[in-house]
Length: 462
Image (tube, rainbow, N blue to C red):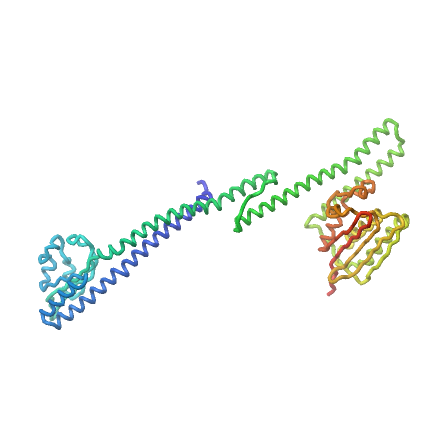
């Protein structure tokens, strides 16, 4: 069996609710008709019959007859009185009722037992529905007479005629309204879903450029905006992936081209073996660094990569890294000015923080001219340990600063392959800082130097 579509399900729901509503209206209308009118009329007939019954027993026949005439003339109630119950069963005294007895044989037997009859039925002689009450008048347990009171239900039928017409017209208008509103609601729900289905198929096939044009603030619009956001993110991820593969290919192509060129030159005897060996070592070192950094970055970008956090005295870590760079500092005659707060203890991975400081200090030395100063400070501000490394180097153009954490991004002239970098160092640094729930910020101007600020959460001693 073919499953119902969303459109058919919506229409089935609308039709079901509509049918149930119409049935409920009909049932309620019938109930009100029976309760508010039929029972009310029966109650009125009983009261009038009880009044006549009391008058029959208390007044003389002339006064009783006047009351019968007055009731018959002053109200919609018709009264039939006979002191011969047999005639009531046969219908003989009333020509208009000749085609059908007013009461049945079993009802006459109830009258003989002194029971009051109440019934509502359609009388063929009157060609209309009537509500009637038959009251027995007994003397010493003997049936003397019968009062037959009835009222035609034509009046209520006529009273209900406008209501019935109103209901018919109302049902007709409701059906039209349901068709119009149902169509709009169905289209409002189904069309965006169809559009989402098409876009989702395109996304599944690798086309991340498609977007949904959905308006509104309901759940479907929110879902559409979420799909657009997902598509945008996937598009950006795919673009970054292609760019990343292109960058990796470009980075690997350069050393491979060098190796191939020098191999051909060696075969032709253009260069000596020593020069070839030097080039091979240099380019394989470059490829090794690139592969190492790529693996490092891939691990850090994964959500499951563990950080072995522990109390780290930030000042001590800076001193250790600074000692490793003493020779490079001396080679360029650079002065390292340090202001270290020994009491700053951060919550971090010792090895990874060492990698951060190593990279930042290496950059500061690499891009500083001789006889300049590098300032390093560690302070505590509220809940963060703050590390600042400031150099007086070539600096970074302001338009390039927002992009320096991107993979393989290099600033022209200052950041070239000649410096030996892979273009991944700052991306790795940023990932490490993010894993520590910290922040890193760089301020720089060309020719004015660079200030790097790193914030790491403090370790809380219990």
